[in-house]
Image (cartoon, rainbow, N blue to C red; front, side, top):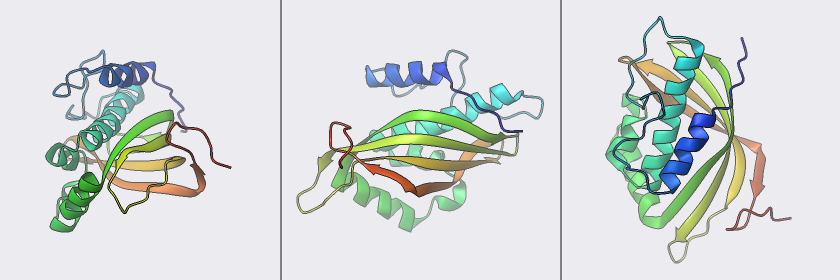
Length: 173
């Protein structure tokens, strides 16, 4: 069943983060975060909140360049030297801000969540000699249940959806 949810709580949480909320505790109004344990008896709404908390935490950890916690939002098979080196290079080269503009739950179960987002990505710092394509794009995330927690397994960018923008978020024609 295709379930579309626009979670107001997520928007409020993102606003709290942008306004300086404590990064050590990213919690929605229901005390759900990226480490909330998934139970088979949970409703689609509860599962959706948990999956969205994982996506939100992933973006926060990327923005704050917290490699250990960022890796904790991914499946364990991605915690390998090449991924860590890639993240270190990315974080040394750019400071990036992300904004989830739209969210659609494509499917949700205790085993897997597939979520499509429209996401704005803007670099606030770019190292000398590098270029960055600020953009808005549609991204599909597949999360799987790993040891009782949702973790991001795949992220797929819809390359046809990419709209280049300037650093202020205005489309470049």
